[in-house]
Length: 451
Ligand code: 5AD
Ligand code: SF4
Image (cartoon, rainbow, N blue to C red; front, side, top):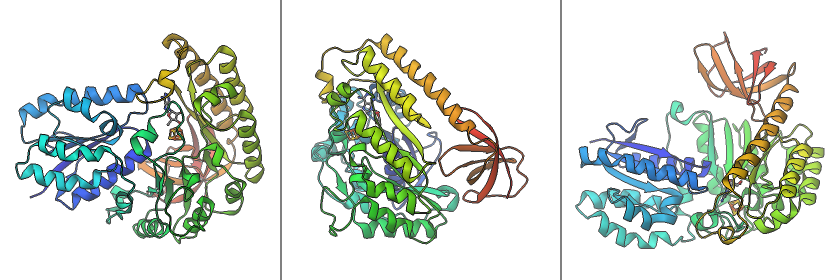
C-alpha cells in the first residue's frame, strides 16, 4: 500500500538535492511525495544550521507538529540535514515526539530505519544504534544513487548534480565543515552517467553542485588523478543534450586561470558565476580564515572579465563579523562599488556552535548589524537595478521555466529572471526563446518574445 511522504526543505541547494535523493529512495519503498503535510504518513524536515535564524525555524516547525503527532499517532516525524547532524542530542531532548534523527551522510539508511520502526523497534533503540551516524564516514554511497526516472513535470528542465560534498576550508564562522565533513569528490563516470540519465529525461540545464566545486578532485580518492574541475566541466559540457551548464559554489582561492578560460571556450557554460567574497576588508578576511586578500580577489575578477566580459557575478557578504569596525565595513561597500556585483546574498554575522569566531571578542550589536545590512542591501539593490537596465533594448536567449496563463517566466544565460506577459506562443519549460528586454526592475527583467 502506498504511503504519503512530505519533505520540508530548508537551506542550500545541497539540501534540495538531498531531499530529491530521499524522495527517490523512499519511492522504492512505496512512498509518494506530496506537496502538503496534511495526510502524510511520514514528515521529514531537512534542516539548515548555517545561521541561527535558520535553526530557530526548524525548532519552531518541529514544535508546531507536536499536536499533529498527538492527533495521528501513526504519523512518523523525522529530522535530517545539518541541524540533525549537529544538534541531534538537543532535538532528542527538546522534541521527544520526533521519531528519527538522521545525520547528513546517513540518509541512505532511511529505508532500513523505517523498516525497523515498522517492526516495532523503538525510536530510542534506533537512536542508540545510530550514534555512529553522527560521525561522518568518508564514503561514496550516498553520492552515487543514480536518479530513477522521474516524470518530466516533476523533474523540470533544470537539475542539480552533486559532484562533491563537504568542505576543508574551515572559515572561522562556518558550520559546514562540521555538518558536511571533509571534501569528498565523486567519480567522473558516476557524474557523467547521472547527467546522461537526466538529459535523456528531458532535462536541459545542469548545475554542478558542491560546497567548493572548484577544488573538485584535488582532495581525495578520485581514481583518475588527471581530472580537475575545469576538465570535468569540459567533459559534462560535451554531453549531448546539455544545453546550459552552471556550477555552484566556488571559493575565490581555488579560482584558476584554467577555469576562467572555460568561460571563454565552452559554449554552453553560462556566463554566471557565484564567487562569495564575504568582506572587503583584509583584516576581516584574515580573521574569517578566507585565505585570500581583497587585492587578489579583485585581480581574479578583472581577469575573469577579460575572458568573459558579459559574465554576471554574484557574491555572498557577511556584515558585522566580530571586530568589524566602520572602516572595515566601508571597505566592503568600496568593494561592492568597485565590482558592482549583479546580485548578492548578504547576511548578518551569526554565532554558530563549534565555530572559532563564536569565541572571538568584540561582537557587533544587533542594531549595528541591521544598519550595516540595510546600507549594503540598499546599495546592492541600486546596482542590481542599474545592471539590469543595461539589458533594456537587447535581445537575449531565455530558457522557459514556467508558463502560467499566458505569462511566461524564464532565465537568461546570466541567470536573470525574465517575465514575458501575454506570450501567445505555446511553450513548455525547457524551450529556448529569444526575448527583447523592454523593462527592468532590481530583481527581474521584462520582455517580449521576438524569435
Ligand atoms: N553568519 C552569517 N552568515 C554566514 N554564512 C555562513 N556562515 C555564517 C554565519 N555564521 C553565509 C556565508 C556563506 C553563506 C552560505 O552563508 O556568506 O557564503
Ligand atoms: Fe563554509 Fe568557508 Fe567551506 Fe564555504 S568555504 S562551506 S563558507 S567553511
